[in-house]
Structure formats: structure tokens, C-alpha cells
Length: 168
Image (tube, rainbow, N blue to C red; front, top):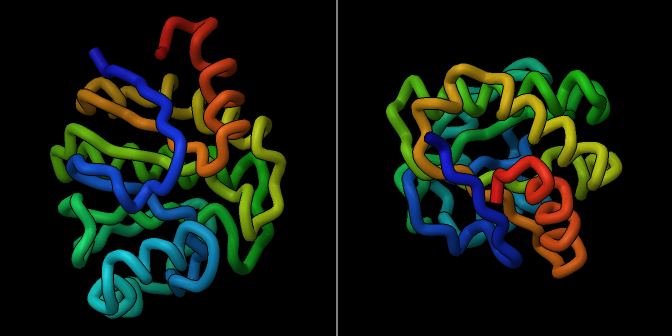
């Protein structure tokens, strides 16, 4: 059974199998979570992204993790050529979970997609992601999913959304 946790702070500090990047479909590591991943992980991640991209909004790609404390970065493209939306957040979340299952990744961490640079509402995006992850049969292959809130109020919101369902 998959265990869910909420963490507050910098997702690039996570130790596990993979972190998910709140990506644009061109897989350019610019600002926000993507920028933090580029800064902490080094240039090899962008080099691999450039070889994979672009992808469609709603899809995901996987790369190595450079200097991060994980083996992979899953780049979930919730925006780019189209703005972040309910559909793009759901589809890119499902694509990220499917890649985690395909690569037999057991411990992964997600930011809330589309909410920083993408400007999508944090709580709405978190609900979409929670529901998508719960609905995916691929989730059963993952031992631990951690939702990261960068700020304290984000982590509090994530706990509030997950606790009533018995997920954390």
C-alpha cells in the first residue's frame, strides 16, 4: 500500500528514487521548481531535457538527476504552449505516476504542479493531483509519495486535503 507524506521546504533536498519537476513542455529549466532543480542538480539535467523536449502539455519525461539525492527527475509538463489547467495538471500527474511505475521507482516526491510560475490556484491543483494519483492503478507500485509545500501554509493546506482521506 502506498504511503503518503507531506513535507515543507525545498523538494531538491528529498532523498528517494525521484522528484517530480513542475515543468513546461519545452523542458527548459527556468524559474520556480525547475530553476531550483537546475541549480541544485547541475547542468546535466538540462542537457538531458534538451534531448527529450519538447513534449506535449500533459505529458512527462524522465531524466537523470545530476547532483540531486535521487536517481531520476520526472518532468511533468503541466504548462508551456498552453497555460496550466485542470486537464494539464491531471494528465501530467498521471503521466508522472506512469513513468514512476515503468521505471520501478518506489519513493517519489511531487511539488504541486502549475502553481508557481504557472499561476494556477494551489489548493485546486493539489486536489486535482490527489485525485489523479488516487485513481491511477500505477500508484499501487509506489511505496511512498511525498507532497512538498515550499512554504508552511502550503504544507498545512496539503495536510488538510490529505488527512481526512486517511492518506497522511
